[in-house]
Image (cartoon, rainbow, N blue to C red; front, side, top):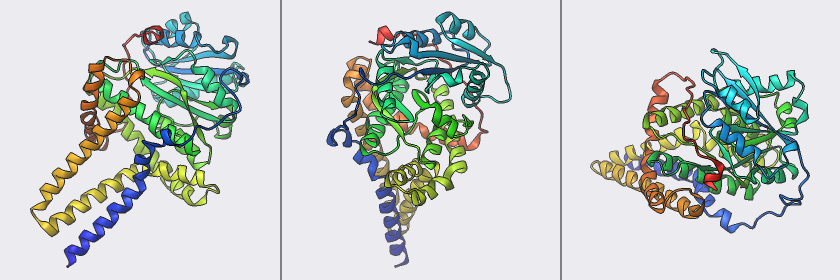
Length: 419
Protein backbone atom coordinates (compact mmCIF):
# COMPACT_ATOMS: atom_id res chain seq x y z
CA UNK A 1 0.00 0.00 0.00
CA UNK A 2 2.80 2.39 0.95
CA UNK A 3 4.70 1.59 -2.25
CA UNK A 4 1.57 2.15 -4.31
CA UNK A 5 1.10 5.53 -2.65
CA UNK A 6 4.72 6.35 -3.51
CA UNK A 7 4.01 5.45 -7.13
CA UNK A 8 0.95 7.71 -7.25
CA UNK A 9 2.92 10.56 -5.72
CA UNK A 10 5.70 10.11 -8.25
CA UNK A 11 3.21 10.10 -11.10
CA UNK A 12 1.66 13.30 -9.74
CA UNK A 13 5.07 14.99 -9.56
CA UNK A 14 5.90 13.87 -13.09
CA UNK A 15 2.60 15.20 -14.39
CA UNK A 16 3.26 18.55 -12.72
CA UNK A 17 6.75 18.78 -14.24
CA UNK A 18 5.31 17.76 -17.60
CA UNK A 19 2.75 20.56 -17.44
CA UNK A 20 5.54 23.03 -16.65
CA UNK A 21 7.31 22.05 -19.87
CA UNK A 22 4.37 21.39 -22.20
CA UNK A 23 4.96 24.77 -23.81
CA UNK A 24 8.15 23.34 -25.37
CA UNK A 25 5.99 21.02 -27.49
CA UNK A 26 3.44 23.74 -28.27
CA UNK A 27 6.28 25.99 -29.46
CA UNK A 28 7.09 23.54 -32.26
CA UNK A 29 3.83 24.44 -34.00
CA UNK A 30 2.96 27.98 -32.87
CA UNK A 31 4.92 29.82 -35.59
CA UNK A 32 2.85 28.02 -38.22
CA UNK A 33 -0.50 28.54 -36.47
CA UNK A 34 -0.51 32.04 -35.03
CA UNK A 35 -0.87 34.89 -37.54
CA UNK A 36 2.05 37.21 -38.15
CA UNK A 37 1.97 40.43 -36.21
CA UNK A 38 1.53 43.56 -38.31
CA UNK A 39 4.09 46.31 -37.78
CA UNK A 40 4.09 49.98 -38.67
CA UNK A 41 7.32 49.83 -40.64
CA UNK A 42 8.91 47.73 -43.33
CA UNK A 43 12.65 47.17 -43.56
CA UNK A 44 12.80 49.84 -46.28
CA UNK A 45 10.81 52.67 -44.69
CA UNK A 46 11.76 52.36 -40.99
CA UNK A 47 13.47 55.43 -39.49
CA UNK A 48 17.25 55.06 -39.51
CA UNK A 49 19.12 54.74 -36.21
CA UNK A 50 22.80 54.83 -35.45
CA UNK A 51 24.42 51.58 -34.32
CA UNK A 52 27.79 50.47 -33.03
CA UNK A 53 28.76 46.88 -33.81
CA UNK A 54 30.79 45.75 -30.79
CA UNK A 55 33.12 42.76 -31.08
CA UNK A 56 35.20 41.20 -28.29
CA UNK A 57 38.03 39.31 -30.01
CA UNK A 58 40.87 37.24 -28.61
CA UNK A 59 43.39 35.90 -31.13
CA UNK A 60 40.88 36.05 -33.99
CA UNK A 61 43.05 37.41 -36.82
CA UNK A 62 41.96 34.58 -39.15
CA UNK A 63 38.18 35.14 -39.07
CA UNK A 64 37.67 38.71 -37.85
CA UNK A 65 38.32 40.45 -41.22
CA UNK A 66 35.51 38.45 -42.84
CA UNK A 67 33.02 39.54 -40.17
CA UNK A 68 34.03 43.17 -40.61
CA UNK A 69 33.67 42.79 -44.38
CA UNK A 70 30.14 41.41 -43.95
CA UNK A 71 29.25 44.39 -41.73
CA UNK A 72 30.65 46.86 -44.24
CA UNK A 73 28.73 45.24 -47.08
CA UNK A 74 25.36 45.67 -45.34
CA UNK A 75 22.49 47.19 -47.27
CA UNK A 76 22.12 49.52 -44.26
CA UNK A 77 23.75 52.97 -44.71
CA UNK A 78 27.43 53.02 -43.73
CA UNK A 79 26.98 56.44 -42.12
CA UNK A 80 24.73 54.86 -39.46
CA UNK A 81 26.83 51.79 -38.63
CA UNK A 82 30.30 51.84 -37.06
CA UNK A 83 32.48 48.94 -35.94
CA UNK A 84 34.37 48.71 -32.64
CA UNK A 85 36.68 45.86 -31.66
CA UNK A 86 38.22 45.19 -28.27
CA UNK A 87 41.33 43.12 -28.88
CA UNK A 88 41.28 41.33 -25.54
CA UNK A 89 44.52 39.82 -24.23
CA UNK A 90 45.63 39.05 -27.76
CA UNK A 91 49.01 37.49 -28.59
CA UNK A 92 48.55 37.57 -32.37
CA UNK A 93 47.77 40.28 -34.94
CA UNK A 94 44.04 40.60 -34.17
CA UNK A 95 44.27 44.35 -33.50
CA UNK A 96 46.18 45.05 -36.72
CA UNK A 97 43.85 42.84 -38.77
CA UNK A 98 40.80 44.66 -37.38
CA UNK A 99 42.30 48.09 -38.09
CA UNK A 100 43.21 47.11 -41.63
CA UNK A 101 39.66 45.86 -42.18
CA UNK A 102 38.23 49.22 -41.11
CA UNK A 103 37.28 48.87 -37.44
CA UNK A 104 38.04 51.17 -34.53
CA UNK A 105 40.19 49.10 -32.17
CA UNK A 106 40.81 49.28 -28.44
CA UNK A 107 43.50 46.97 -27.06
CA UNK A 108 43.01 45.49 -23.59
CA UNK A 109 45.41 43.55 -21.39
CA UNK A 110 44.02 42.19 -18.15
CA UNK A 111 44.89 38.68 -16.98
CA UNK A 112 42.72 38.82 -13.87
CA UNK A 113 39.33 39.90 -15.25
CA UNK A 114 39.10 37.47 -18.14
CA UNK A 115 36.14 36.82 -20.40
CA UNK A 116 33.78 38.39 -22.89
CA UNK A 117 31.68 40.11 -20.22
CA UNK A 118 34.67 42.03 -18.83
CA UNK A 119 35.91 42.86 -22.32
CA UNK A 120 32.55 44.36 -23.36
CA UNK A 121 32.28 46.41 -20.17
CA UNK A 122 35.77 47.78 -20.78
CA UNK A 123 34.88 48.55 -24.39
CA UNK A 124 31.83 50.60 -23.37
CA UNK A 125 33.93 52.48 -20.80
CA UNK A 126 36.55 53.17 -23.49
CA UNK A 127 33.89 54.48 -25.85
CA UNK A 128 32.68 56.84 -23.12
CA UNK A 129 36.23 57.99 -22.43
CA UNK A 130 36.80 59.06 -26.06
CA UNK A 131 33.35 60.65 -26.32
CA UNK A 132 31.65 58.37 -28.86
CA UNK A 133 29.30 56.38 -26.61
CA UNK A 134 26.50 58.95 -26.87
CA UNK A 135 26.64 58.89 -30.67
CA UNK A 136 24.72 55.61 -30.88
CA UNK A 137 21.13 54.63 -30.33
CA UNK A 138 21.97 50.96 -29.82
CA UNK A 139 24.82 48.46 -29.64
CA UNK A 140 25.04 45.24 -31.65
CA UNK A 141 27.03 42.44 -29.96
CA UNK A 142 28.84 40.03 -32.28
CA UNK A 143 31.54 37.38 -32.00
CA UNK A 144 34.59 37.49 -34.24
CA UNK A 145 33.64 34.30 -36.10
CA UNK A 146 30.20 35.60 -37.12
CA UNK A 147 29.04 36.57 -40.60
CA UNK A 148 25.96 38.71 -41.33
CA UNK A 149 23.42 38.31 -44.09
CA UNK A 150 23.55 41.45 -46.26
CA UNK A 151 20.10 42.69 -45.08
CA UNK A 152 20.71 41.87 -41.42
CA UNK A 153 20.82 45.45 -40.16
CA UNK A 154 17.81 46.54 -42.24
CA UNK A 155 15.65 43.94 -40.50
CA UNK A 156 17.05 44.63 -37.02
CA UNK A 157 16.49 48.36 -37.49
CA UNK A 158 12.87 47.71 -38.51
CA UNK A 159 12.04 46.10 -35.17
CA UNK A 160 14.17 48.54 -33.21
CA UNK A 161 12.11 51.33 -34.77
CA UNK A 162 8.98 49.57 -33.45
CA UNK A 163 10.16 50.26 -29.91
CA UNK A 164 12.08 47.14 -28.83
CA UNK A 165 14.92 48.08 -26.49
CA UNK A 166 16.58 44.69 -26.95
CA UNK A 167 16.58 42.29 -29.89
CA UNK A 168 18.07 38.95 -30.81
CA UNK A 169 18.28 37.36 -34.25
CA UNK A 170 18.26 34.02 -36.08
CA UNK A 171 21.47 32.05 -35.65
CA UNK A 172 22.65 29.80 -38.45
CA UNK A 173 25.89 27.85 -38.85
CA UNK A 174 28.56 28.48 -41.46
CA UNK A 175 30.24 25.07 -41.09
CA UNK A 176 27.19 22.82 -40.55
CA UNK A 177 28.56 20.02 -42.75
CA UNK A 178 32.00 19.65 -41.14
CA UNK A 179 31.03 16.78 -38.80
CA UNK A 180 28.41 15.51 -36.32
CA UNK A 181 29.35 18.15 -33.76
CA UNK A 182 28.84 21.14 -36.04
CA UNK A 183 25.55 19.77 -37.36
CA UNK A 184 24.40 19.16 -33.78
CA UNK A 185 25.15 22.73 -32.79
CA UNK A 186 23.56 23.97 -35.99
CA UNK A 187 20.26 22.17 -35.45
CA UNK A 188 20.06 23.24 -31.83
CA UNK A 189 20.64 26.92 -32.59
CA UNK A 190 18.14 26.82 -35.45
CA UNK A 191 15.64 25.23 -33.06
CA UNK A 192 16.23 28.02 -30.54
CA UNK A 193 15.42 30.60 -33.19
CA UNK A 194 12.61 29.16 -35.30
CA UNK A 195 10.76 27.36 -32.49
CA UNK A 196 11.57 28.95 -29.12
CA UNK A 197 12.19 32.64 -29.83
CA UNK A 198 9.86 32.74 -32.84
CA UNK A 199 7.00 31.36 -30.74
CA UNK A 200 7.75 33.70 -27.85
CA UNK A 201 7.65 36.62 -30.23
CA UNK A 202 4.27 35.55 -31.62
CA UNK A 203 2.89 35.22 -28.08
CA UNK A 204 4.27 38.59 -26.99
CA UNK A 205 6.55 37.01 -24.37
CA UNK A 206 10.16 37.93 -23.75
CA UNK A 207 12.79 36.15 -25.85
CA UNK A 208 16.27 35.01 -24.84
CA UNK A 209 19.71 36.01 -26.07
CA UNK A 210 21.98 33.18 -27.21
CA UNK A 211 25.64 34.15 -27.06
CA UNK A 212 25.92 36.55 -29.97
CA UNK A 213 23.88 38.34 -32.62
CA UNK A 214 21.88 40.56 -30.28
CA UNK A 215 21.28 44.26 -29.79
CA UNK A 216 20.21 46.61 -27.01
CA UNK A 217 19.55 50.31 -26.83
CA UNK A 218 21.83 52.77 -25.09
CA UNK A 219 18.83 53.74 -22.96
CA UNK A 220 18.36 50.16 -21.76
CA UNK A 221 22.06 49.73 -21.02
CA UNK A 222 22.04 52.89 -18.93
CA UNK A 223 18.83 51.85 -17.13
CA UNK A 224 20.40 48.50 -16.23
CA UNK A 225 23.43 50.26 -14.75
CA UNK A 226 25.86 49.48 -17.56
CA UNK A 227 27.25 46.16 -18.74
CA UNK A 228 27.89 44.32 -15.46
CA UNK A 229 27.41 40.75 -16.67
CA UNK A 230 30.56 38.84 -15.78
CA UNK A 231 29.45 35.24 -15.27
CA UNK A 232 30.66 32.57 -17.69
CA UNK A 233 27.41 33.04 -19.64
CA UNK A 234 26.91 36.78 -19.85
CA UNK A 235 24.17 36.25 -22.44
CA UNK A 236 22.02 34.19 -20.07
CA UNK A 237 22.69 36.67 -17.28
CA UNK A 238 21.58 39.58 -19.46
CA UNK A 239 18.41 37.73 -20.55
CA UNK A 240 17.62 36.80 -16.95
CA UNK A 241 17.96 40.34 -15.62
CA UNK A 242 15.74 41.61 -18.43
CA UNK A 243 13.12 39.05 -17.36
CA UNK A 244 13.44 40.03 -13.69
CA UNK A 245 13.09 43.74 -14.49
CA UNK A 246 10.28 43.25 -16.97
CA UNK A 247 12.27 44.42 -20.01
CA UNK A 248 11.18 42.50 -23.08
CA UNK A 249 13.70 41.09 -25.55
CA UNK A 250 12.34 40.82 -29.09
CA UNK A 251 13.29 38.40 -31.85
CA UNK A 252 13.95 39.34 -35.47
CA UNK A 253 13.38 36.20 -37.53
CA UNK A 254 14.41 37.86 -40.79
CA UNK A 255 17.82 38.95 -39.48
CA UNK A 256 20.13 35.98 -40.08
CA UNK A 257 23.74 35.59 -39.02
CA UNK A 258 26.17 32.69 -39.13
CA UNK A 259 28.80 31.49 -36.70
CA UNK A 260 31.45 28.81 -36.52
CA UNK A 261 30.96 25.67 -34.41
CA UNK A 262 33.75 23.60 -32.81
CA UNK A 263 34.84 20.57 -34.80
CA UNK A 264 36.81 18.85 -32.02
CA UNK A 265 35.06 16.91 -29.28
CA UNK A 266 37.34 18.13 -26.47
CA UNK A 267 36.82 21.77 -27.41
CA UNK A 268 33.06 21.20 -27.63
CA UNK A 269 32.91 19.62 -24.17
CA UNK A 270 34.97 22.48 -22.74
CA UNK A 271 32.66 25.05 -24.31
CA UNK A 272 29.47 23.36 -23.14
CA UNK A 273 30.95 22.85 -19.66
CA UNK A 274 31.44 26.61 -19.49
CA UNK A 275 27.82 27.14 -20.55
CA UNK A 276 26.56 24.86 -17.79
CA UNK A 277 28.81 26.39 -15.15
CA UNK A 278 27.65 29.85 -16.22
CA UNK A 279 24.04 28.69 -16.01
CA UNK A 280 24.68 27.53 -12.44
CA UNK A 281 26.18 30.91 -11.56
CA UNK A 282 23.15 32.74 -12.97
CA UNK A 283 20.71 30.37 -11.25
CA UNK A 284 22.20 31.06 -7.82
CA UNK A 285 22.46 34.79 -8.45
CA UNK A 286 18.99 35.37 -9.91
CA UNK A 287 16.89 32.31 -9.00
CA UNK A 288 14.97 33.90 -6.14
CA UNK A 289 14.30 37.07 -8.14
CA UNK A 290 13.02 35.11 -11.14
CA UNK A 291 10.71 33.05 -8.92
CA UNK A 292 9.40 36.20 -7.25
CA UNK A 293 8.80 37.80 -10.65
CA UNK A 294 6.21 35.11 -11.46
CA UNK A 295 4.03 36.55 -8.71
CA UNK A 296 5.04 40.22 -8.47
CA UNK A 297 5.03 41.37 -12.09
CA UNK A 298 1.86 43.17 -13.07
CA UNK A 299 1.37 41.80 -16.57
CA UNK A 300 0.78 38.18 -17.53
CA UNK A 301 3.41 38.46 -20.26
CA UNK A 302 6.11 39.41 -17.76
CA UNK A 303 4.99 36.71 -15.32
CA UNK A 304 5.17 34.10 -18.08
CA UNK A 305 8.64 35.24 -19.17
CA UNK A 306 9.90 34.73 -15.60
CA UNK A 307 8.16 31.34 -15.41
CA UNK A 308 9.80 30.16 -18.61
CA UNK A 309 13.16 31.55 -17.52
CA UNK A 310 12.88 29.52 -14.30
CA UNK A 311 12.01 26.28 -16.08
CA UNK A 312 15.03 26.68 -18.37
CA UNK A 313 17.40 27.40 -15.49
CA UNK A 314 19.42 24.98 -13.39
CA UNK A 315 16.54 24.85 -10.91
CA UNK A 316 14.09 23.69 -13.54
CA UNK A 317 16.45 21.04 -14.92
CA UNK A 318 17.24 19.75 -11.42
CA UNK A 319 13.53 19.48 -10.62
CA UNK A 320 12.95 17.54 -13.84
CA UNK A 321 15.84 15.16 -13.14
CA UNK A 322 14.66 14.61 -9.55
CA UNK A 323 11.12 13.83 -10.72
CA UNK A 324 12.46 11.36 -13.30
CA UNK A 325 14.60 9.43 -10.82
CA UNK A 326 11.89 9.54 -8.14
CA UNK A 327 9.49 7.92 -10.59
CA UNK A 328 12.03 5.24 -11.49
CA UNK A 329 12.58 4.54 -7.78
CA UNK A 330 8.86 4.21 -7.22
CA UNK A 331 8.56 1.77 -10.14
CA UNK A 332 11.44 -0.27 -8.72
CA UNK A 333 9.88 -0.47 -5.26
CA UNK A 334 6.48 -1.43 -6.64
CA UNK A 335 7.42 -3.75 -9.48
CA UNK A 336 10.98 -4.76 -8.70
CA UNK A 337 12.28 -6.12 -12.00
CA UNK A 338 10.33 -3.52 -13.96
CA UNK A 339 12.91 -0.88 -13.06
CA UNK A 340 15.38 -1.79 -15.84
CA UNK A 341 12.58 -2.01 -18.38
CA UNK A 342 11.23 1.40 -17.33
CA UNK A 343 14.69 2.95 -17.49
CA UNK A 344 15.37 1.51 -20.95
CA UNK A 345 11.96 2.63 -22.22
CA UNK A 346 12.56 6.14 -20.88
CA UNK A 347 15.97 6.37 -22.57
CA UNK A 348 14.61 5.16 -25.90
CA UNK A 349 11.69 7.58 -25.66
CA UNK A 350 14.08 10.44 -24.90
CA UNK A 351 16.28 9.60 -27.89
CA UNK A 352 13.25 9.37 -30.17
CA UNK A 353 12.00 12.77 -29.00
CA UNK A 354 15.41 14.30 -29.76
CA UNK A 355 15.46 12.62 -33.16
CA UNK A 356 11.99 14.02 -33.92
CA UNK A 357 13.13 17.48 -32.87
CA UNK A 358 16.19 17.26 -35.14
CA UNK A 359 14.13 16.04 -38.09
CA UNK A 360 11.49 18.73 -37.67
CA UNK A 361 14.08 21.49 -37.35
CA UNK A 362 16.10 20.27 -40.32
CA UNK A 363 13.09 19.92 -42.59
CA UNK A 364 11.73 23.35 -41.61
CA UNK A 365 15.08 24.98 -42.37
CA UNK A 366 16.25 22.71 -45.17
CA UNK A 367 16.94 25.50 -47.66
CA UNK A 368 18.63 27.65 -45.01
CA UNK A 369 21.19 25.03 -43.99
CA UNK A 370 24.44 25.37 -45.97
CA UNK A 371 25.37 21.73 -46.43
CA UNK A 372 24.74 18.85 -48.82
CA UNK A 373 21.57 16.78 -48.61
CA UNK A 374 23.58 13.85 -47.27
CA UNK A 375 25.12 15.98 -44.53
CA UNK A 376 21.71 17.28 -43.50
CA UNK A 377 20.22 13.78 -43.31
CA UNK A 378 23.22 12.52 -41.33
CA UNK A 379 22.80 15.47 -38.96
CA UNK A 380 19.25 14.38 -38.15
CA UNK A 381 20.46 10.97 -37.01
CA UNK A 382 23.48 12.20 -35.05
CA UNK A 383 21.62 15.06 -33.34
CA UNK A 384 20.31 12.90 -30.42
CA UNK A 385 23.84 11.71 -29.64
CA UNK A 386 25.16 15.26 -29.75
CA UNK A 387 22.55 16.25 -27.18
CA UNK A 388 23.32 13.22 -25.01
CA UNK A 389 26.97 14.29 -24.78
CA UNK A 390 25.78 17.29 -22.77
CA UNK A 391 25.75 14.82 -19.85
CA UNK A 392 29.56 14.71 -20.00
CA UNK A 393 29.64 18.49 -19.68
CA UNK A 394 27.20 18.33 -16.75
CA UNK A 395 29.56 16.08 -14.79
CA UNK A 396 32.57 18.17 -15.81
CA UNK A 397 30.77 21.35 -14.73
CA UNK A 398 30.11 19.92 -11.27
CA UNK A 399 33.58 18.46 -10.78
CA UNK A 400 35.77 21.28 -12.12
CA UNK A 401 36.38 24.89 -11.17
CA UNK A 402 34.62 27.49 -13.36
CA UNK A 403 37.22 29.04 -15.67
CA UNK A 404 36.70 30.98 -18.89
CA UNK A 405 38.58 29.48 -21.85
CA UNK A 406 38.62 31.00 -25.35
CA UNK A 407 37.27 28.84 -28.19
CA UNK A 408 39.57 28.87 -31.25
CA UNK A 409 38.03 29.93 -34.57
CA UNK A 410 39.90 29.07 -37.75
CA UNK A 411 37.18 28.29 -40.34
CA UNK A 412 37.54 31.14 -42.84
CA UNK A 413 34.39 31.43 -44.95
CA UNK A 414 33.21 34.60 -46.63
CA UNK A 415 29.66 35.96 -46.60
CA UNK A 416 29.65 35.74 -50.40
CA UNK A 417 30.44 32.02 -50.26
CA UNK A 418 27.44 31.45 -47.97
CA UNK A 419 25.07 33.47 -50.12
